[in-house]
Length: 377
Length: 206
Image (cartoon, rainbow over all chains, first blue to last red; front, side):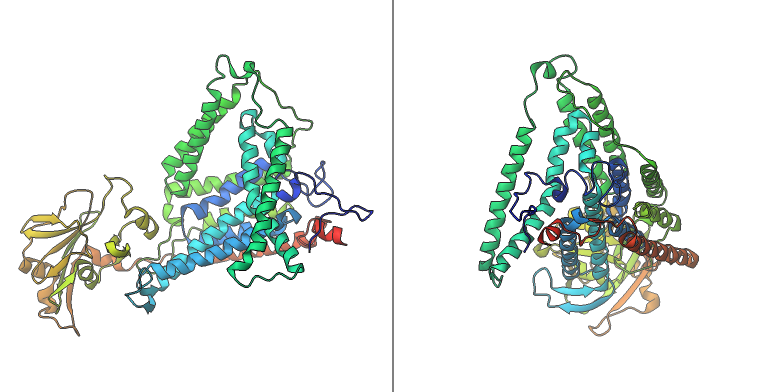
């Protein structure tokens, strides 16, 4: 059973209101100089660029070569950078693998398409009745690999990203959005970790989960704990002035009124662009992301007379950040070029016949560069 | 049956069946043309891809290949009189095909664009005369198909050297991932707290 940290006298010490390290929001398990417990962190901007480059292949296609190369590279980075903060994300990863397997089963049972049947369920059975094909199984496996790859990128980012530095790097106008996003990002691993702790504690009391009725002793403390943590988090944010109304001079005046709507419009456009990328529409993706970035840049430039956030220490963009950002930028450039010139290199459809997928060695070699952060650990 | 693909190429199929009537989708299946159809429960099946034209299954499940009203999709027609192609809005699963009827499939957003045909014309164009297709039995259904769609059934594999290179790259990436992962576990960077085993709780319990 896990316990709360004890002080040297053996007395219980209450956990800090917001344990930023264990929540994945805030600092890494390193000291403020970026040394000591484990490797020095890499600038979060470089990590974000790496994540974008690693996310493109599973989003835009189902080519098994590209998916496998991306997943292997990201697995390498995950294995190299895994740390104590990654524990909660690891549970999420296992849950994601389970969902991917369910997806494989669902596709095999419901997509009765393809030229290679291996079994048949009675036609009278709704939805699942009909031939089961190797084609559907193959497509389900590829989709599962894509989902697992995306989740792996997210968990790697969640475990390695220095959220505190990232929040400091963002423009003042985006600070509230970034804090909210960081809290939301940490919700799932935090809940999974809390669930594991509750289960451990109840098991020590002799509780066994044998039927759905036994879930009560697990879910009730989980819900109560979640509410308590939310309350603590809200108090901590309130104490730091989060969401406090700005003074009138910060909200009135020329050019200041439109900054809020412009920020919202920029974020919306960027989201539409990301959706376009996910749907494989390059025009919408480039248009949305480009326009969104331009609007956000313009909104961020217009400074008002409101509170100005200052930094004690500027984050350092060192050689390793250059290496990660440079390699990720190269991967992204090759991916976009291949998407524009040879989109079949990303695609694969096992319907109606299973044929050999298209292959692009230059694209695979470029995807291999996603391993660079693993070499910098 | 006649199929008009995205490039306007025509494929003719002459299918003899012993039953009094079959469904339109069953007729399409019996032609043996490359087909991807997805079921929508009681609404029947929708054609996603035929003779290589169409959209991936995932998109077909979302919008039946119709990203916009002006986008083409596989539409189902029946020839009422030679040259008069009428759309069948109930779909191929609901429509029944009887002896002598001519069905048409067209990758279009509007008009059918199918040619005027009579049954003897269709039999000749599909090569039914050459194959001797005639009255069919359940044991030996007779099918004759000719046209642009036949060439789609097999696709070229690709350059073996490219596949070998791809395999080598995958092995290199996998080996690199394994080696770098192990190195970070065992190397100087794997100090206290770096490994997954170093949980703060475990330290507290110790």
